[in-house]
Image 1 (tube, one colour):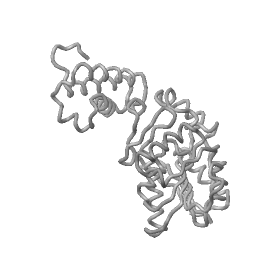
Image 2 (cartoon, rainbow, N blue to C red):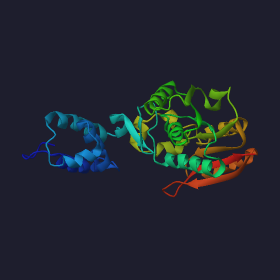
Image 3 (cartoon, rainbow, N blue to C red):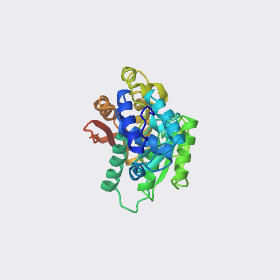
Image 4 (cartoon, rainbow, N blue to C red):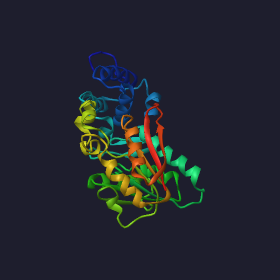
Length: 294
């Protein structure tokens, strides 16, 4: 980065790094460069543009250079800076949890839409987020639905620790109960849920082999792949949800566009659900499958 004699300003660093990361295969090179430089400078991304012509100094440049090299080798930006934005909230992440994806916001939106359609504003809703990971679904729903009572389960103790920290950071720890355990077995003492929601592992073995190196090399495989078909978790979760949901309660699941029709059919075949619906994400892909308990 220091091959030129003139000063390496914030603007020049961003320009050079964007091109470098594009050549390294990043599909979000400019955003990556901004997040990493803002992290090195310990400022908000927007502040980069008020310091566009300033020299950040040798120490910051050295730190930034190290981060850029790691990113060029495939390490996800979220793991380097320790957080990811989701639904306009900041969540702590590390390599024991999946990095939040924009598509999961569509699951949250689907739940909020169902709440508006079927509940009164002062209803106290009981919701369980199965496979909570970093806690983005439970945390966002708790923030949006102030009178809700939430449970967040995960098989991974490390994930539960990350989620718990996020709930405390957003001052909702008293309203979200974390439970370590397998699917809804983790809340065996609870029932009559208004919503069972989940973004479980749903990547098939075949799909996994085709994923980007960033995902395969750095994100936890157990949070992605449930088995050969990708449907394995759903096959276990659907009958559990039927037992735990109150009549007219909702099951809301994220899935792969390739699996959405099969998942909808699985729920229909179970026999305890009606109003099975497939909702598209903002990219126009079949992504969210929801159904109402008889």
